[in-house]
Length: 515
Image 1 (cartoon, rainbow, N blue to C red):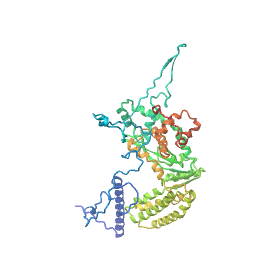
Image 2 (tube, rainbow, N blue to C red):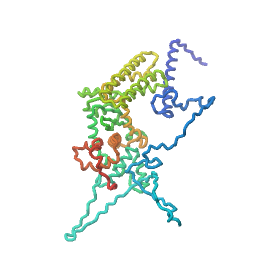
Image 3 (tube, rainbow, N blue to C red):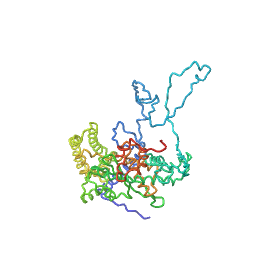
Image 4 (cartoon, rainbow, N blue to C red):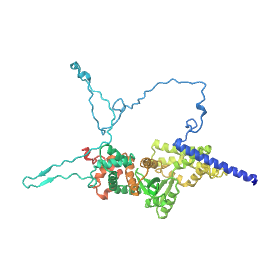
């Protein structure tokens, strides 16, 4: 029988291998904890105290089974479940405005129909509102036009039918706007809208719906371009990227492409689309821009800013503190003391911003307050980072090491907001606006073609901007789709939601259905 030789390693090498294995196990446990949290845990990154932290699913809690020595029940006053604010239309708490259609249903009193009806009289009416819905409500508009014959000249004439938005199309503008709003705002795929139409008795093909929405978005494209050009005139831009599956890459696989939303100073956003995540798309989109670019820590933005400045543009790169915080939050499980110190320091910066918002400080006062209260915190924070990065026991694979490196490499970008009160501390306002893309992915999953992805970016740019400016997206589309053919092309900027709100919101063009 062959004997195996036992290798005798030096103690120092054994200790090194042991330390390496311990670090690897810790790293794997950190990854497992992160995966558990993604599936079963809380998604919020809020820093919780030990007293109110949610118990994890896989952690055994002995406190639940232990019985307390005594139970104390404080005296209390039971409150009503109905918390009314005083502006409701009835006791049920239902609130609605005058734009909601109403139908009066008369309820007969049996006393008025009986043998003794003459002994009763109506002294008042009591109304109670109840919300109802008409499923898949569609109306067919039939234009009945008289055929007129001149008695003397014996000529026959018929009044032409009012023009439609799409030439030769039998869809009213209300349907076109409704399809696009359901698709972009409420994330309802076209095949589901087709099913709803079929259930309502409307028979048409899904290809027809696709054709309608493509033609309608083509009318909106110049408006989108005008809005993008105005956004690039801002002094401060926020930019990010969000993935979207588009087209077929191979059998059973879709292409990974990206939207690059750009958020301007006046609450306008443009969803540009690219086939990849390379910096060239960002560079091409920002050509001609001069100002501050606020982004996350993706290195493509740093490269973009450097190349733009080489083209004699003047672009300053600012980084998002929320993304910096996220790295420390992820390391909270493995290095609780170090991570919590960093999170509390960053929380101090956000308290400064909260004070500025609460007091509604003007630009100069906000800038002075930031420099007085936030700048010392940042200096202390980065001095602490420098000290921690000198510790040899913190291995590069440790999540806290990655967080320290991430922040240290973006020292200058993270301090840019201290010099301009108009620069926000993070890109959360942009992330809230781009949420429509991941929400849509949960419903329609992907875009079948590259043209479809570009069209969706055009539509979402206008719809999200409407939401940011407090405009009803449906009313906007019904008006603008009819106004496109009437408005001068040189004044297309007037049809962007920002300008349209001031010029046309109070005198809308409506569908014949509303007349």
